[in-house]
Length: 255
Image 1 (tube, rainbow, N blue to C red):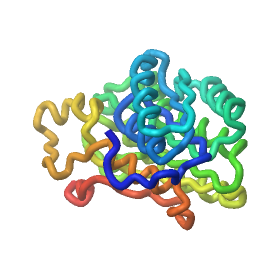
Image 2: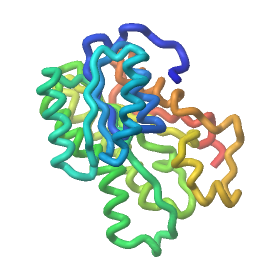
Image 3: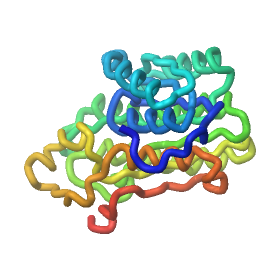
Image 4: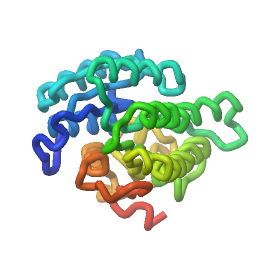
């Protein structure tokens, strides 16, 4: 379901690539852009193909002008290159890239293996690096990159060190991309969500055990983050680049 004020036609004629599009914030983001008239490229893991199909059908009903559904493991650079190549072949241009794909794992720092650290960094950070590289290569002036970071980049909890480190790196990448993208006319911003009502949130052992408590008025919906993403990608935010926008219901101020 798309909520909030929808600006019909705001992304008419624009092509938007959304990673992690099969669920949670990614699905809500795809539907938001669809409702505002964008053509969409939905990218997620092959195992999420059925869920992507459901999101694709919802986007079509919401008003997407065209859709492309693609398998993509963002930790594999070849997959990312293939997605951007397919998008360019289908539409001739890419105007917005939204890096949402990510996952959490929960262990003490010393209990994560090197491979687990690398995989978490690859999905939560390097995937955005790969898409940013391709976006800077093909986007025309007026393009926008929006990264979904996290308040864990600034204030975190126990047992999520690789995720927090990756999200902090993503915030830094956003600032660097803004600097290097400016001569190209390409903006880069990020949103840092707090606790959002998604499966990833509810699988946290910190939440399940009651060690970490989130008041109801600080538990957001994916659609609220999607609205911020759409704003940052739009011409309404033309004077914003290198910004990290916190959207957490005030949670960061209480940690």
